[in-house]
Amino acid sequence: DTTITTAHTSRLDAYGAQPSYDTDAFAELVAWVERTAALTRPDRIHWVDGSDGERAALLQDMVDAGTLIRLNEDKRPGSYLARSDERDVARLESRTFIASERPIDAGPTNNWADPSEMRETLAGLFDGSMRGRTMFVVPFSMGKLGGPISQLGVQITDSPYAVASIAIMTRVGSAVTELIAGGASWVRTVHSVGAPLEAGEPDVPWPSNDEKYIVHFPDTLEVASFGSGYGGNAILAKKCFALRIASVLGRDEGWMAEHMLLIRVISPEGRALHVAAAFPSACGKTNLAMLRPTLPGWTVQTIGDDIAWIRPGADGRLYAINPEAGFFGVAPGTGPATNVTAVDTLRRDVLFTNVALTDDGDVWWEGLTDEAPAHLIDWRGDDWTPDSGRPAAHPNSRFTVSAAQAPSIAPDWEEAVPLDAILFGGRRASNVPLVVEAFDWNHGVFMGSTISSERTAAAEGTVGELRRDPFAMMPFCGYNMADYFAHWVSMGEVTAPPAIFQVNWFRKGRDGRFLWPGFGENARVIEWVIRRIEGAAPAVDSAIGRLPVELNLAGLDAPQPDLDALFAVDGDGWLAEAELTEEFYDTFGERIPEELRAQLAALRARLAAA
Ligand code: GTP
Ligand code: SPV
Ligand code: MN
Image (cartoon, rainbow, N blue to C red; front, side):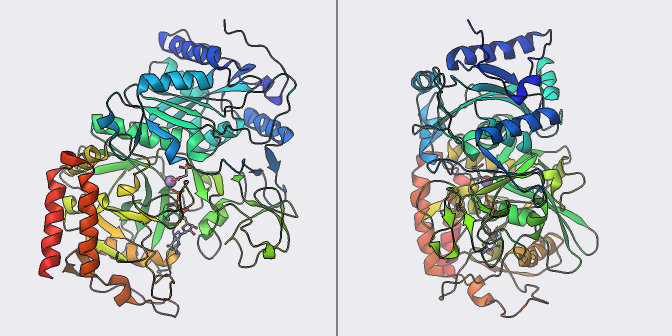
């Protein structure tokens, strides 16, 4: 029996009636919702229709519940601040599982779980987990509604914060339900914060559970997430669906789901080229996606900042879309000098999480202004002054905002674009030059497979520690990464694959400072990339790839960057890297594609000859 009792009233009550369609496909959706409700036992069910009135009611309910603080309407109209539980501030890779039938399909880089055992564990956790709460049914589309590359899903969740976030990050509501009722395929995702309320028990602003699970069932295209309300753990359309599940769909159907930003670069001659770039979490995707070039005549338009879905087109090129509809961006470090486009994007209608609150009801984070305000309420809700000796905003504090709001957004950002270049990058204090071009596709795939990067605050772990993050997909590949490398090799069989480059904005000098000014000045690297594709810039072959003969530094403020240090190729350092790459490949055994073993051997031979 799935009768729902309405325990309390909310402003949402005027919305969210169950839609009705007379199709088997819709009956299947309703049956799944009812089964989930029978297990989790919410007080009420709300079907998200995506209307403005619904959104306003949802936000007001969260303000009443203490989950959101409404910001000063004159300074930051339509904007809110959420403070999470301090144990729930980032993705949890150690609690993320791939429950494939066979362990080998998860591979050595994922936590594998036996699907039937995991289903039993989850059934225990979800049993009654939504008691006292509202269960939301959120139909969403990744990619524009009905688009040729788009995919549909439904997230069931008991977190109104997740609902508000999904409504910004994807396209939600009745139009999606209608497509599902019409027979379109969709992915099932279930999320609970795992904090049932007994009758009369007061709620907390950020309910969560110490026990956390983020589980993917690639064989049945399902996701279940328990215990966390934060980011990639709770907005299941994002990392769980659009990367982990979608990467499996891509493997099976001949396309790719990648952790990449997507931009259009327009040269002074008015030519438009498209560049995708894979950098690990908190390594500069949003910043490059919103690049405001310091070079006169160049323009960058934003298409996406975190995820790209890529498919071969009939003309033998690779075409990409941004499947998302919003940005879930890192706040710290975002300021007028680094990313003025983001600052302009955030003027209104933003959901902030774990940033600091100013005395006049606005937000602040490290890097927003050079000088911190004299007094703030920090991300934990405590008084803060500049001499407090701790950050006011959490290092992984974030903004959630609609993509359409970015002044740099491409007018046709929801359409697929042909890729001219792919960049791979990471945070590397040493060894990796500012930019290096791959000799060909397979050499580029080899580069992608060898990416290491220093850990950031975007997930749990020690910040700064170097770790492998091939293709920036280590935490997001839903299957065996050796098979994923092979899939990349095979995608290069199109007639006109994009050129591949490795970049590194984060190389440091002996004094421990970044050698490259970064941000808007990265346009100088982009210029070289574009000129290479046009055949207009010379390069010199090195053991690790093609290096610029010249980089345009015109108009760069003093001090001039040390180009020798930025482009130095240390043979011993690279031989040591090759050693570590072999060890890494060996963790996959025989599954590493022979093309990549051959690339490793060729790199060693070039290093020995240099
Ligand atoms: P996720 O949303 O976690 O996937 O992160 P992201 O890859 O989009 O990273 P983002 O652009 O938000 O940048 C993360 C941090 O790196 C911010 O603090 C930025 O200020 C900093 N950053 C970005 N680009 C550069 C750069 O060119 N140079 C330097 N030094 N720092 C940068
Ligand atoms: C990342 O960590 O790569 C993010 C943030 O983009 S989250 O959505 O939490 O994964
Ligand atoms: Mn990301």
